[in-house]
Image (cartoon, rainbow, N blue to C red):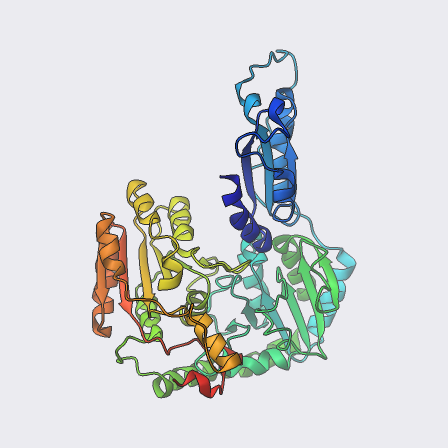
Length: 495
């Protein structure tokens, strides 16, 4: 079963999430004899973990457990794998009663908070204070650091803040200076479509916990070429990877606090003088987006448009709601069309590797972690097809999540990308009809199948009130795709 850990640890590594995996290895006397399930686990996990070790003697277990937790939670968080031979689990070593015992708690992160070089913080403050069009783009590192108050304080000084998909919820998107999600889906219908110039014309860009990856930068075409970049990250290796930057290596929470303090010591009249016009620009962009939606999308259409589904989910979410998405279109729909109502609200999306099938397992993990929070999962029928069986897990473990399945009978991103690139699509893209609500009922859960948009709101309210594992299978328009910039103007998508 250790091989099944590889995709999960790969996602955790790319998304910088600390995980400690304790993996049973074969009996030490049977090593290299083709024992049952023997594999070179050191090699297997080397590419998907920060740290991999095998315990050789039982007397060192304390040491290795501490090392594993320290590796996972320090620096850039990520997975640590501890291999434990089967026979070692049966040993009962005689420990010296006088021997020192480890008692430190290493199971929280960030384990060690550091602050960037004060001289560089001062330099960053000078750049921002002197900028004409500064912008902050916050990534998932803000969530990992818990730097919400510190980022909000920076925004309160007059800095507009955009986020990546993983950074969504780092600031309240209702704030007058919140730009929304910046990335590869800023075409018409995107919430931030009318604010693209705020990104492309920025003269100073502060990146916070941001990997500057392909999707977040629209294949490295979105961020302005002539801008000065300031990059704050706990991992010095990320800084300057794609954009030469002033290096702020440190924890986001501590370093943002120090940066805000440094800014308060400077002349911020430029920021203050531009604030009213900037807030007005953002407000008008939001109004323009609403007008676009009214013009471009029929929210009463059948099959149901995903934008209508998102509108109904947005209407029932609270600042405490956790929204989880599967990979592919589901992640883009929630990133674009749902609202982060407070700083720190969580929108969980598999953006490290972005493989299909993550939605329902993510939702179960979120519900286990926050049992008091409503958890809504958005997934496509392709992604949900990987994990139907986990409905039984949800029911058995009393984890009442709501799963909204966008049932369009295709692998949407696959089909539309193939049409966009090649004008045709392969035979892996279309499915036979499946009734996911019936599958839910077969697992002892609540299953509802919807074909009319007016039925969405009551179904969501009933599911939230029921306290039961609920699957809402929504028949959606297979021609609907998110506002991905590379799809814009492609005639092949108008099939």
